[in-house]
Length: 275
Image (cartoon, rainbow, N blue to C red):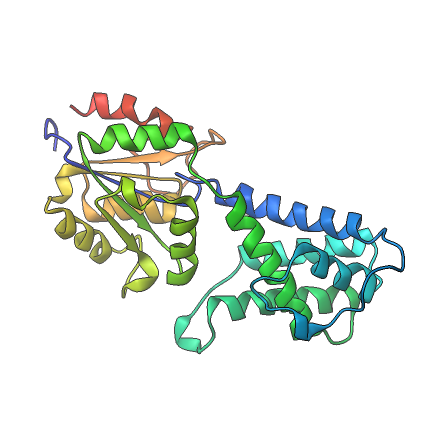
């Protein structure tokens, strides 16, 4: 592949172009702060009524009313609930054939977290409110930085660009819409909409066909050694570029990326070497 010109770049989304992990943490923190601060109110607050709320539009005040006032939870318990939810999210395994949507699964994470933290049974409606508060807060935080927008715009003048992201369709489409990145790419491929996701070669072959390029014409850029880099290696791309913000070494037994950079903003330096 030495000397072959790069024609296309495949980008991962989460923690490559957008800081999904940070946004999720900020949403949790925001939720905890809102819950703690809101409930210093006097007795002027109106009685809570589920009939007045929809799960999607429920605001921070209602979730706070539930977790702090209605259940009389202290700050430590609220943080415990949030920490349990984060752990469940980290270990999440979503199976669409199981008959539950990703939203239902994550409402279940909140319900279990509340049960584990306070004991007894938990209201599914309470868990639903907690989930949509977290979800909407995370989407509000997600964004493409101006620097990354400029980078993508400049790269698209010289290369074909494709966004290839693993994950459940609805969740990933919501992120794409939230950060308004459609205009930067020639195509967007969501792994959850296909039979196989990264690192399987089939989804890379789909991408190559969509762009009308060969594997050897492409560079794969992503933060995951197991999916992005391994997938690029399996598919036979020209080069793999690992985004490692922590600057850590590649773990023993993992696939070795061709290049490692701390931020996607350093990608032009790698592309210059591949000319």
